[in-house]
Image (cartoon, rainbow, N blue to C red; front, side, top):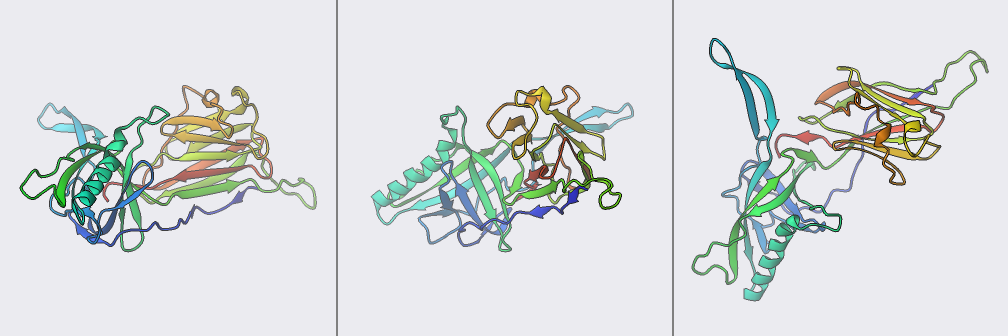
Length: 325
């Protein structure tokens, strides 16, 4: 019969973080900027050559929205649609150095760490930086940012010699903050048995099971699915609203998924890839396929693999999302 295991949170090694500081809209936290190369720039270490100036920080609160409404005949209006908007974060930074050349070196390096988010990579895409907020309890939330403007300096007397400050504006495609630790739900088909040996029993080669998935965040998440073969067909259903999608392996260039082979289904953006990089999106049951999201709280779902045997498995992975830092 199917073997059910509980959702697990995959532990990760905590990154090195600067000392915490009081930040408006955030509170007592350690802030780090991670540039597109992965270099970590501490933002709350007052002993460092650069750090955040608390006065003027903004954009760290709830997600901005645009509301669409329809007028009512007797006055007023009814809310019809809510659309989250890109977020803008204002981030004042002081930069200094032991002498003029050390200051210039720090100023140029930090400027490049922000502005390189606008450069196209070899793949033709821009890589965002990441603003990371770590709390004293060890929890970490992140948001991807692109440099917009502000690395100008004050332009006042005595600035630009051994110190200066910039008020950086950062633009966020996704306005939500994302947990640094993913939630993983694993389901695996158990060993198949003969119906009559040693006594009447039932095992399933199709249904890994109905279960409940919990999203601990405050915003919908769009999960990634990793399916391990054998499997000939894959169906995932959200039971509360009936949304579902099916991937039929015979309708893809790959064919049936063999033992040990994997296919990864991303729900936002829609993408289906084999472990060798083949594009298998043609195997989805378009136009009826709905690559559904998980709302906050508990959601009943069904994982089904046709042609499954011992070793067939499904892993659902997502990062909880939040309105604020």
